[in-house]
Length: 132
Image 1: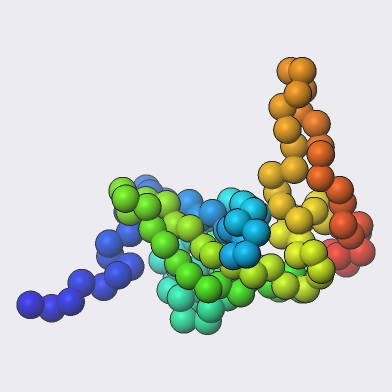
Image 2 (image 1 turned 90 degrees about the vertical axis):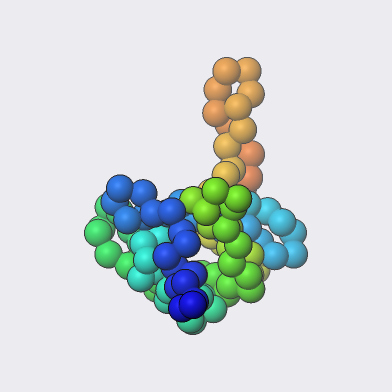
């Protein structure tokens, strides 16, 4: 019996995408949420580096290609429904790691307090100096 390609076991959405969560390996911080298509997930597994699919640009996005803030991938997991991918990563390029395009450690830096979203995590590096 032929072995099924592991990519065929992923439940891709109607656009051929799967949601992906990047979690820092050591701290367990959730760094970001993004999308991958089949090619991005295959590249990620092959390279050991996060490669996403940019829906706005309609192309592969090698995390850190502009910012230098690369995600080294240690483990790739899939949830019980095979429709969400979880990456265990080390965020490189800055200490502490910057995953967010706003220059913060995590994209999840706002907390709902008193009916308003409040930014609670600091900007570690000015985004203007990251994206030139």
